[in-house]
Amino acid sequence: MGFCNSCGRPIVKEDYGTNEDGSLNPEFCKDCFQDGKYTEPDITLTEMIVRKSKEMMEKNPRLPETVATGITTTFIPGLKRWNPEFKDDYQF
Image 1 (cartoon, rainbow, N blue to C red):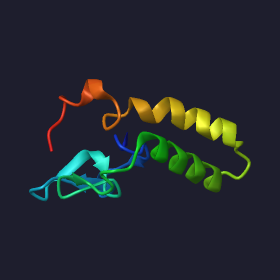
Image 2 (cartoon, rainbow, N blue to C red; image 1 turned 180 degrees about the vertical axis):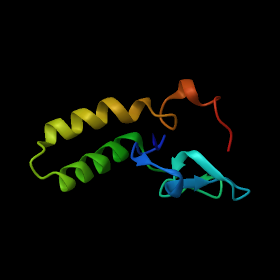
Image 3 (cartoon, rainbow, N blue to C red; image 1 turned 90 degrees about the vertical axis):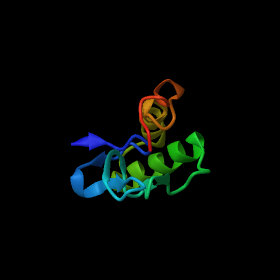
Image 4 (cartoon, rainbow, N blue to C red; image 1 turned 30 degrees about the horizontal axis):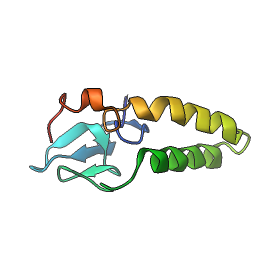
């Protein structure tokens, strides 16, 4: 099991996004990447952090917002979509 390099969710083969040629892309989930393109090309890093923090709190109501935000603020910026150091590591 890996993690989507856009949203950070755990993914297995059934969750993989697709490249332009229809092949599976194990770097991204199907919610974030389809047909070789991001499904939400204009979403910002901050918007992704807020969205994923809310999802974490919905799944675990006892999780404080500060903890959820701390996790996503630390984890998501290091994912390939958001980290400029990785931009040349993969091709769509």
